[in-house]
Image 1 (cartoon, rainbow, N blue to C red):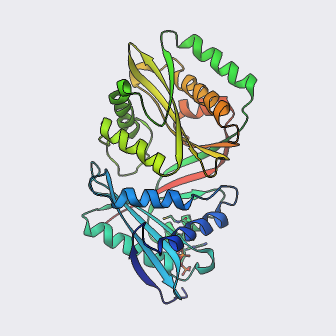
Image 2: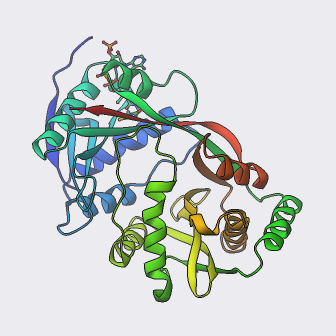
Image 3: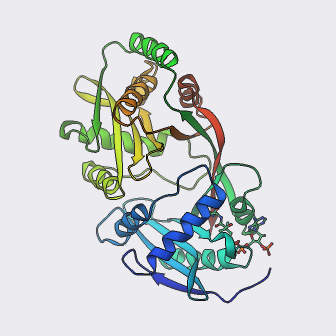
Length: 336
Ligand SMILES: CC(C)(COP(=O)(O)OP(=O)(O)OC[C@H]1O[C@@H](n2cnc3c(N)ncnc32)[C@H](O)[C@@H]1OP(=O)(O)O)[C@@H](O)C(=O)NCCC(=O)NCCS
């Protein structure tokens, strides 16, 4: 390996250096995923502030790798504090002009040290893989990490095919008599808040996590409000649809739209409580939120979603709606 003189600097989202730190993510994203709008600086700053603010559900730290006075690499460490006390999530990016010089490895080593100092023994990282032979995969393998979960990335190109949407909807309405569909934006209605928290909790037990060393997350209404506020602070709006029976929310789906670059929306969670499955509620809430999206944000051209191929019901719903494969997202771990 060629080496370079690299200083690692601790920084926060309101430091001057943070602009250069954000630019590294942008340059890496444009090089590695040219079809995707990069995450905006506003998003990085808001996420950073959430991580360093006291009292939230996650702590975190940021490091910049400096070469000749400029930021050449970036590290973010996320530490859950309400659950998963042994876990740390690391994210590393190196500017394409400074790769294969050991900068990524230096940042990773610092992230491991930071995590260990906080008592974390299970480290997790994600690699976006639009095609084969990604640098992130080679880097993770080089450092002895294990791939614990592989999810297929699927995209739905908008506007969705109306005939297809109506067919899915008609069948879902027939199968789900007795359930009312509700929609909201950015803020779960107060009366459904505790049910929404239970659904988020079930996301961490019922959605496939492969061999990732993660445990059930603790969600309550307050944490949902924190989560909702963090999306707004990051410049995103979230459209949601839910299924209600007897006044209780039993299924939900979320779509996140980055307002500064709305061409691409992201599918958030979708879950139907176990005892309400088999009524096509997953398809029904997804059609409902898709109709909201197309009515309110015609500028969105694409929705991206990630599913484990073992999640047959979710993959089937997405394929029925017209989502098609567009690469992979791999999740890696190492135990200290
Ligand atoms: C992955 C990434 C962080 C690597 O940064 P880097 O500074 O180039 O990494 P290093 O120089 O420390 O590489 C260490 C080793 O990883 C492996 N590696 C890294 N990039 C590779 C590539 N493109 N092809 C093959 N092997 C690679 C090599 O074994 C390398 O050692 P070598 O150069 O002596 O052969 C960088 O490519 C990047 O920012 N990618 C996009 C974001 C990402 O995927 N991050 C990983 C998720 S945490």
